Image (cartoon, rainbow, N blue to C red; front, side):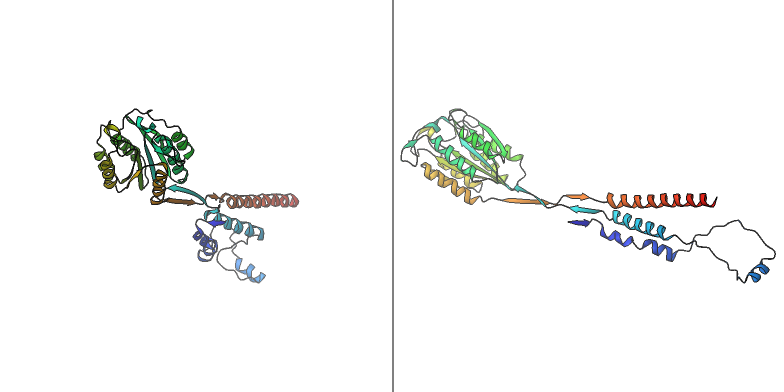
Length: 329
């Protein structure tokens, strides 16, 4: 569609007419001959002399050219534009960070899978979390793996193929044999510092208790709560385990409660998949659609047309005058 950025400037169109009507004609003093018998000459000629200005009449071609040029200049001042179809950009309003435990215990083959057999814990986690990523096409996702220390594997990104590729390549023990639960929350805090979205969610999965962190998990969770970061905690593995492999359920429940999240326990792959389905439901897609319409400026067309019209008129008038002078000579 076409539009004028400043349509009120079209009110200037009658300005030349108002100037002609309201202002007196321009006066010039010209040389003349004084006749002592002027009165006798005028009476003999039957002419009544008057005082005032002589306003020369403009040629019709001049009037058309100047009026048309003025209209085009005013149109150019009003800034005609061509407004193109709207362009839309979807901007996520939530960042989701996935933190996965890759301690050595994640290779334990005690996790029931749908066919009834026992598989490695990490295999079930890879399958379920990758499926969760597939269901979140319009969220920015990040990925952390933690063992002896936490490591950012993927920054917040819309490239979900990259996130799935990183998840499918996870191997137990690559980050060390122990579990740094508190430090992984600390790394999440630093990653969320660089985001500007209104909602920040950390989904934390582990199969043991904290054995390697420098920052206590509850202290990290307290800071996360103050920074409006929601943590959903998921525990998997053998609830009857002892020692370093014992799941610290109380700490995970406290982390979730202090940050407004929820705690889940997954005893097998089907239950783990159900947990991520619940997380998918309680964190619905939140997006903001930004829309704008590109505009192409067109003021140079009427302005250029006005210049061409005046140039052609003066060229034509000059040639016409030259021809008349030569004919008179």
